[in-house]
Length: 103
Image (cartoon, rainbow, N blue to C red; front, side, top):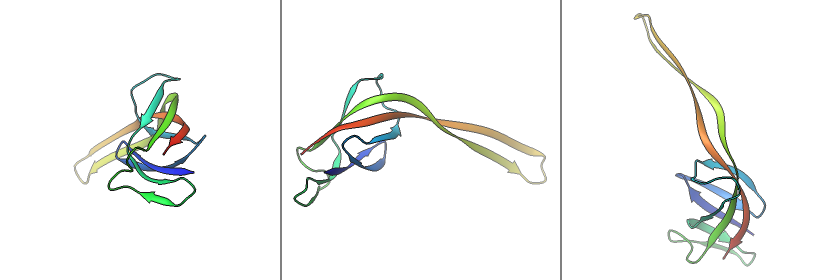
């Protein structure tokens, strides 16, 4: 059984006991969260695709940690102007564990 959910403007294919990093969600470690935007659901009897979401379906997850992603370097240069800027960015993310998929 798996589902395709949408959170933070991205789509994820999830199954029970999966651990994934999503964009920052409000909450602390151990808090139960619910993803209601289920775009597709495969409950074993075939794939159900929503229009745009599957009615009555939701994915229950638990927050494992609030983490930061990999460092991304941002380098801007204007040629022949002696102008350079170097910045780093670390996106804040939430690590969640999928508990169950409710059809």
